Image (tube, rainbow, N blue to C red):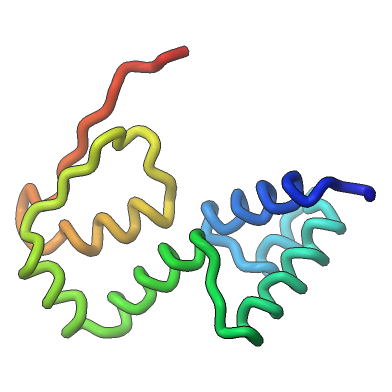
Length: 118
């Protein structure tokens, strides 16, 4: 194998954490051609089988809440405050979802984090 499956999965997950789809990843300067090909095929298979992975759960939930204001309002009313432990470890899609849920009221999103374990 040119690349190990775990290496490919890690690169696909990193791209999704940067909120890139297969097409956007493939257009990046220096994008790995194998990752781009596998990412595209993986995304196609997930869609065809009506499946999602963990990264997609975050991205699709944020997309749903942005497209359906009623759903967003329902959850913002249910959770007026969102507190996140280990906030320094939150990635882009996680932050986007947290900001949607906690963004309705001033001070609605809070985070705590530890010092660097260096």
